Length: 165
Image (tube, rainbow, N blue to C red; front, side, top):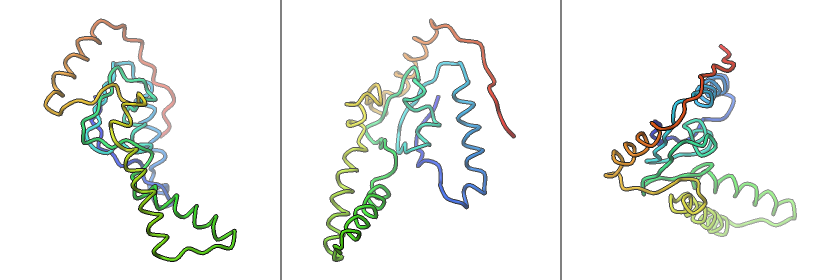
C-alpha cells in the first residue's frame, strides 16, 4: 500500500553526495521486485521519481486511485514553469530578442497556469494514469475491495534482485 504525497527526489550534487541515487535505487528495487499485490492512493502531490518509486502507473499496481486533492506530474507547476521559462528566454536571447520583466512574468504565468491544469487528477484520469478519482471518505472501502479482488490472484515467487550496499 502506497499513500502518495511526495515531491519527488531531490536533484543536484548535494543530494547526490548524500546518497539519494543509491537510496532511491534501493526503494525502486524493493518495489519492483516485490510480488505482493500493490495498491496506490494519490492523496496529495505525486511528482517525478517520487511517483515512480511509490508504485506509480509504471509498476502496474492492482489499483491506483487519486483523491480530488491529488497533483500528478513530472514536477510542480512553479518548478516546471521556471525550467520552461529559462529555456524559452535562452532561445529568444540566441535570436537576439530580449524580454522585459513584465512580458517575462506574463509568459511565466501562462506556462504555470497551463502546467497546473495538467497536474489535476482529472487530467491524469483522462489519460488512464489513475484508475479512478475517489472521495477520501471512500478510501477504506476501495482498499477493501482491492484486497478482496487480489485474494483470488496468484502471488509469484519473491525475487530479491540485485541490491547494492
